[in-house]
Amino acid sequence: MIRFFKLLGRLSLWTFLLTLTIWGCAALWFDGPASRLLAGLLALAYALTTLALLILLRPRRRALAAGVLLFAVLLVWWLSLPPSNDRDWQPSVAQLPSAEIHGDKIVIRNLRNFDYRSETDFTPHWETRRYDLSRLRGLDLFVIYWGSPSIAHTILSWQFDDGQHLAASIETRSQTGQSYSAVRGFFRQYELYYVLADERDVIGLRTNHRHEDVYLYRLRTPPARARALLLDYLKTVNHLASQPEWYNAFSHNCTTTIRLHAGNAMGKIPLDWRWLANGYLDTLLYEDGVINRSLPFAELKSLSYINSRAQAVPLDGDFSNAIRKGLPSRPAPPAI
Image: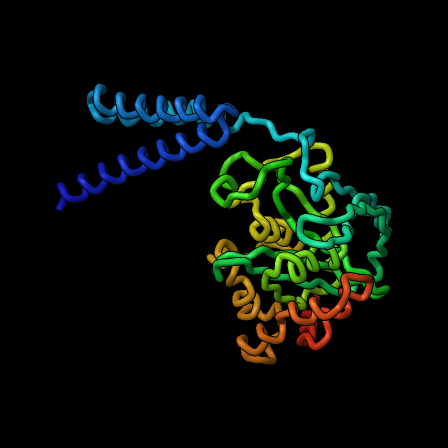
């Protein structure tokens, strides 16, 4: 039995080193020199060097330690790669939003409100809008599917009683000619970007032009907590305007970052696997009573599907009201 556990321990260590080596090769390939040939040669050299250490060094503990040390050197290089706000950005992320906050009054600059004729044909409009936090009444969540039911894109939207809605979508900031890749999202390929937008832009684009499946849930969040959450978002928006950060598909994606903001604004948010497999986030919120529980979940989700309503109206100023017609009601907020 002791021999079995020793063997299992050794196997775990070698598997760990193999995982580090594969990740290191991928980091050199994606984040190394722009030349694919040179990046490939460096990744190959790294793999061969690690293999040589394992073959030539004895005892095996020494070989393992040398392999980990080599990875540590590569990791220091990778962590030193600086993000930037100065690149040739795609038009949809060309401007950085920012916010001025004076008590209850907020001024958002570079709010996106494009006119779309198709997903790729649009007229850019970057606007300045003013919001009154004393008129904040609710918070809504959009869950958007384009493929696997396990993975979704999530967008929060704050509702004000003067008819305004402020949507925030946490995304990648892509350069001209660069497309999103789920694999590249784990490396230093994209800067982190917060789209502050009118719903007719950031939601209408997805329902009417990309034809993704969009669900809208009204959240139980009290106005005071919705306010705290919005202010935490805007703090990061202003920070990114001067100090860019890297997007990461695991730790800083559209949903895990919502959890971080919610934790900052509302207190500790329990861990749950559905924050990662975010296509099932609505089931978690249903279980916790954050969304309407007066209906069976399947019926609630069916009623929360907004594509047909979105596609039946023009992308104009009444879009936000139109997509909310027939939605299940917002749960009463808890006493705080």
